[in-house]
Image 1 (cartoon, rainbow, N blue to C red):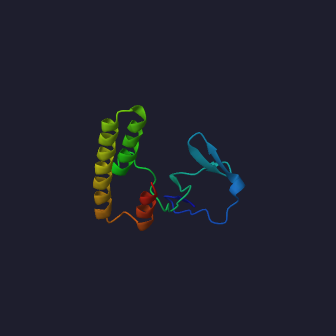
Image 2 (image 1 turned 120 degrees about the vertical axis):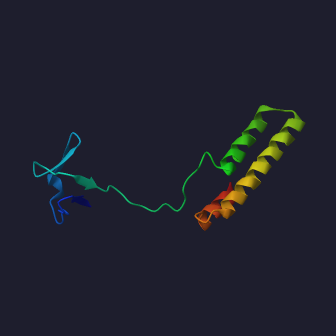
Image 3 (image 1 turned 90 degrees about the vertical axis):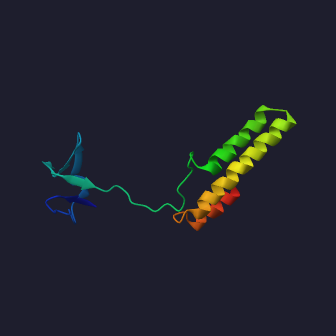
Length: 109
């Protein structure tokens, strides 16, 4: 979909006549003024990994276990990660914008 401030929706046009020159759109060798182009609109079922989210921090924190052989330190890392995970789940459960597919996905992590 291509539209302009002048209201020209460019319906039923020959797409091969569109050309980008620098940062300007041209149609049939004429500059199109005040152009708005929508490349793609999609709905993603999952928002993706949020590196600032508690659940993400909890999983990454578990990686520290690989760097130690001390059983007390391993237990401390595990418990810390579990606490972060529980806090993160509580925040997600309270978030009305968090969709069910995301909740199911997080349980697989």
